Image (cartoon, rainbow, N blue to C red):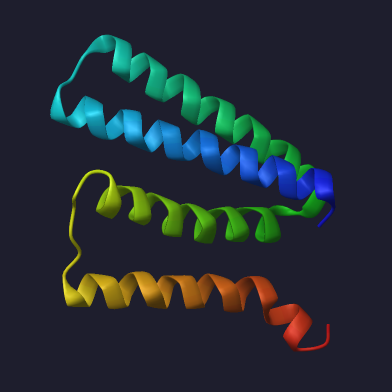
Length: 112
């Protein structure tokens, strides 16, 4: 993945992370403004993902985005919002990270 691709992936992750944070605040105290901002942010993030899909393929783009968002959103939920995962949920998140890493890196590891 090129520097531009990595930059776009990082930018989309930040946008999705902010969207998730606004969605959480909407969940706590719903307002139409928060809903509109959330929808705009998720739409912008998905538009960036469309560019990444075109440039790098669907499997690589969405797999990388999924694992990065999984880690980032859980970090924000735990650190910023004080949420907690049970032991089983934590294991599930860890397995999800491993699964996406295997899906993404599988062809390279298999020599294809």
